Length: 152
Image (cartoon, helix red, strand yellow):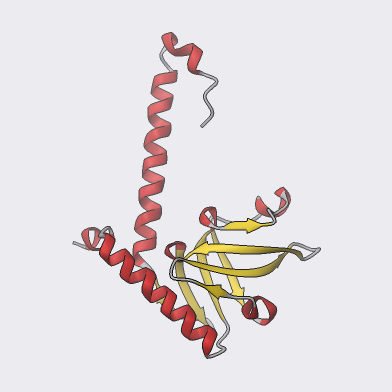
């Protein structure tokens, strides 16, 4: 039953709206917060240097306080903010889809959990894993040696 609920599009829309409303509330009431998100769904402008990008974990924690908090712009689909990265505080505008936010905290207390987000990540992982396995099977056939230059 749980997987049926969290894979339902209507449930995901409800969670996304709840995420939007929670961020809007925190911003308007000036409550600093942190959140975990799936970093591969975030975008950076300008793009992060490779050494910084490669150091970010699959599930990354962002802290919204100070200038980063003041720079927050939230829409019904995305959270956008400016942040500094690395020793030299490389500045980039970060855009995070709300459905990739897994959890929000205020003063180490969890105030939001997005169950639908974890289901989406599970589906993406499963699909990528299946595609990779299928490609390996195709490439293992000697008749398909001309396909070995396909990038994954």
